[in-house]
Picture (cartoon, rainbow, N blue to C red):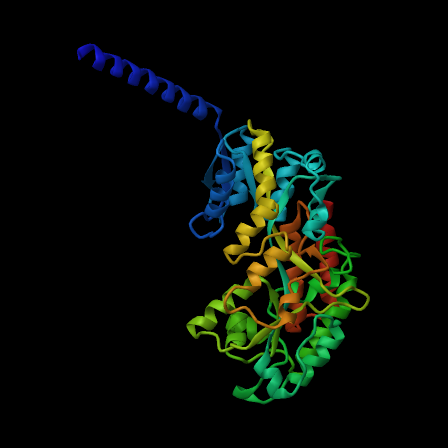
Length: 424
């Protein structure tokens, strides 16, 4: 009896040793990637992306380092410049930060990998071209917001004006806004709404791809300011000065049915859906249309912001990091991001179906079609002086819109200010 138990104990010990060795071998083979990001707790798609990737790749474990949003670029560059190999996957927060990391040789070029994996740049709607620096790409986008037109169906119905279409020129849009404007004082309904950001006026001017907001010459902006100021003088839009003084958030006039339409980013879709549910937004019957375009520019042209993923040049796990970047920025990752109510960089049929199936999304076909873009240009292209350029343009924009400077004077300030930055 004693020998029998000894044999069982010995067998059990041997089996345990084998299992332990197998576990140790698996642990030794498992790759751990460290993902640099910001605002982990407030971002809905981080954990689902990790869960989806780890489920498909059990030999890879994804950890993360939250560097915070306030000083993300500075903290990230400091850590990478110090030669640390702790970070493998880098989230690109903005274009200036992206440019600085490239200048410091802290990111791995992705061109060879893109070719080897047959990644089609066209799936990103032209954004990849905007992320190209000196012929090389260092980041793949995984989420992107773009500009379109929101409108209040009830206000258009009341005015007897047809809804905006998915193919309107800027002049047609302006005429439509005039027709739907009505009332006085507290009962005034404005045809459209231009928030105080410079981008609301300036971005359509770069849809044709012939200009960017970092070029240094801004004479091409004149007709765009003329159009907007004319609408302001006619009372078709709220006064810029009034909006600035009152610090009015763009959502308020839309929620309160004071405006019939509004150019705004795709991020507002989920917001209005949520606010309709809580009763804060009275714009219950609303729709979407493609952003109005300049003459000669295809319908569906728009501007976008982008969040990308890169691989740290010092990473010891280049191939694993590249594979994770491919997953998150590809169709699989796009599906995960879309389920959180966020727009991924890839807008394919499956992604669009997920977003348009969200309860509260407008049920008309045109609103669904409005999400299909022809081309997207970045709000501000890659430039090491992008933040300074943005400041110069914003100051001149404010001067033009408040009337403290003429359009010509404001544009002259833009040209001079950016030229001085480019000399430094």
